Image 1: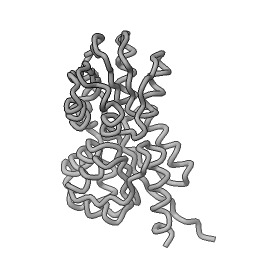
Image 2: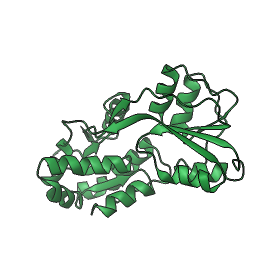
Image 3: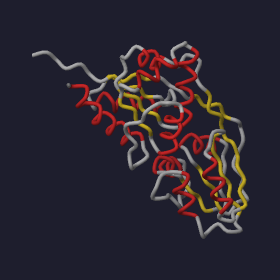
Length: 250
């Protein structure tokens, strides 16, 4: 009996334990991972303020950098944008006071609305954080200060997935932020395959981790197939592989 070919699925996570976990997950789902990091972390050496009433951390990376700098939140209410960030905070020894039901900037704004009027809110994150968070907190009456803990840059050797897409050899792609979309297209452009890669993705199953990522992809002509209700990588990967598999078997 002829063995069915395995789905080729691109994952764009940073080249650390997150990419290793993505590869392991995709293999467990019966897919062939295409690990193609579209983000690399450049720390700024900045540290979150310690005089705020609320402190917002938006990523595991930000938590790790704050902990390495021996940052202490003092009496601030500590907010995590999702379970992964909350878990990183607890692992680093911090208490977590607020985790929104919806793991997004808008979800956190909704969770804090009504509580932060007149409060000092420190937002510690990357240089590509969504304005939805800071603008929303400002509209809720908070005095918002943002500290950029790290910059997100595109690795020089990224782009294998763009070439596979351009050749019609990529079955699915997992975009985990607007920046991964932009860096994928920049890598494709650099390799001279931008339009072909976009066309190739039209025949693939494309997943976006949330609405902002979907909007960015579609603004650039990439049709998105899957946006999971829960904004985490495991859910995204499982739903994309499930959606891709029936088409792949035909």
